[in-house]
Image 1 (cartoon, rainbow, N blue to C red):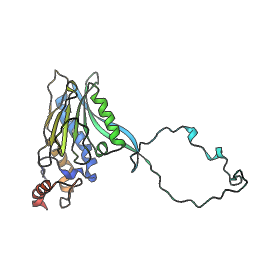
Image 2 (tube, helix red, strand yellow; image 1 turned 60 degrees about the horizontal axis):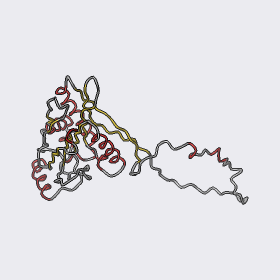
Image 3 (cartoon, rainbow, N blue to C red; image 1 turned 90 degrees about the horizontal axis):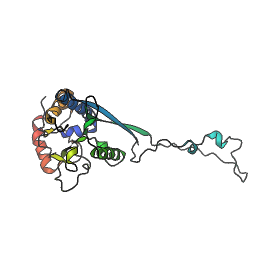
Image 4 (cartoon, helix red, strand yellow; image 1 turned 180 degrees about the horizontal axis):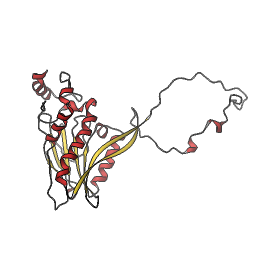
Length: 265
């Protein structure tokens, strides 16, 4: 089935599909760019890893000193000598079953365009995930990395195909849109190019910045997204009788969506 949407499919923002779509999209972007980058550059899928507490937003502390964790032998808590200084015997109450927050290892993938020979990182391509945008450790970790890239000589492309959560930080008056693509060239910072678009609009194409002397390939993200959706059979798997995932659409956007999907509902 061909794509139903002129641009981004909001149903792909559902947790049921986003992880698969995110991974497939990164690989598809890399595959589409690789022939255009040879022979001077290559593109690699990279992974960053951090740990978070499940269902908690607090950062997990790793590497607690051994002195902070005492073994039962060091306390000498045998049943024969569980006594207070007063001589009274310590009574063991029936334990209550509790649930502890467990550390969760989060892996996030992104792309790096590197120069052949030197392996220098020329451009970083990020496709934002919910963890990058929602408040907590994931956003903090991403903002730190974003800051390091913006302070370096590497270019940054940041693709935000999620309507939910607060947009990444941009200074000045920025027109709000459902989706955003930022192209940040190192030579033009702090200025950057913002490609904003809404649900009914096509996903815009944009250039991939490289070294100043090299021609910039154009990333046709709409074609790449359509190819991912076709290969993954998302249209056949999504139940379009259901409303799209949060956030709730505006009245105008909802009417547009209902009219678009009416023939298949």
